[in-house]
Amino acid sequence: MKFLIQDNQSGRHEKIRSYLTDDNAIIAVLLAAIDLEWTLRRTIDAAASKHPLIIEKLKNSNISGLKRYETEWNKVCVKLHKMKPLNQIVSHWEELDKYYQIRHDIIHGRVGSTGLKYATKRIELILNASVSIAAEGKLANVDPYKKLARRGLFGSKKT
Image (tube, rainbow, N blue to C red; front, side, top):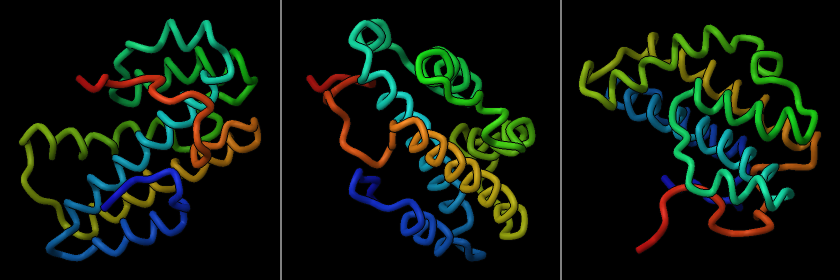
């Protein structure tokens, strides 16, 4: 599955939900986690792209985990664009942080599978958070699904 700017969020979420089967629930969890982090990162990057000094400060920063995304969101989106903090955008932010642990458990080998019922609740919370975050970005004219003004803002550099 690709995560491209030209995607639309509802189509992407429909594709992620298509993996919600007894055999593929673990894949759906990981794809939902990727979608959430993609949405957070793209919104932060889009907000930062409007501020050249911020771009330079954050260019080499590693953002990983919901707590770190929340910190960066507050620095860029809340402070510079007057967006709401994540715990106001996502009404279940604290619960999301707890349920997001499944992503870490899978990635770090603490669990090797998950049940459909267990995964479904977590996936829905994660995807709903992604929708809320993208909507807040769009309200502030920093749509994560639009091409950034400047490429290569954050993340690893190609060598």
